[in-house]
Image 1 (tube, rainbow, N blue to C red):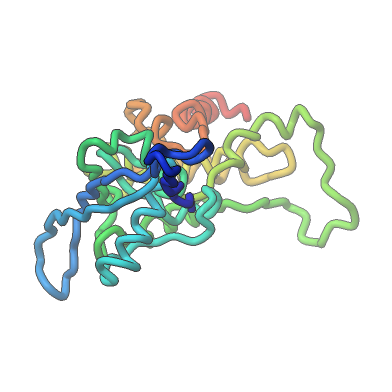
Image 2 (tube, one colour):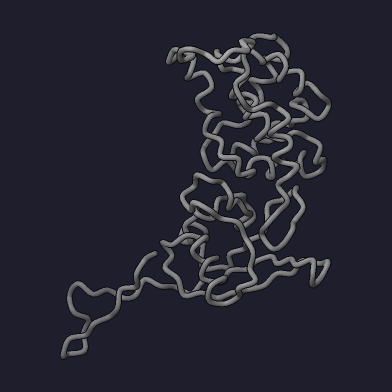
Length: 259
């Protein structure tokens, strides 16, 4: 966390060289609260903070929980954009709270924070991730080969073959893409972008031998054909994955059976 720089005046009352004004600003965080033990309805609650705008939204949520309201509930773990656990809607856009600087989201106005859409809210900013992870498990996100024996050496792969699916290896399962998808909002049975991205990662892996099986899973009525190519998923991905492109490549593989 940033440490405030204190003013220090000389005998004439002027700030001494090397000492600047405090960088802190007053920011308002408008958080959508939901506690099923208290009410069936969600409400918006404002919190004001003195905070350095170079800090992150996650830092602000920590300050609120530790200093103002210990009942505020949200997920976080590594705080470095790797675990994917703190995905939420900030100013109406899916983001990772640990990667979003306050200065980048116009702190002069109230900053809205709410749970991601399309998944049942359990409390405050925490949603039920079970349907998301079930779709992930359904596409068999692991290497499958016909050889039942353990390999005696590495399964070698050329740099070109590895590059073919490099982009989709970056997924951190934060659900930002899936919960930004309007199809998923309206029909939770849709596999969703993240599941398709993780299927893509193995469909196009030259070492894997279950590509046809995964394609048939995604050929289902709730599979890849439900995508409407709105690019919401690509815009929402905090890792910069070209999600829509990956989905189109899976569609093409289903038509051509070439992968």
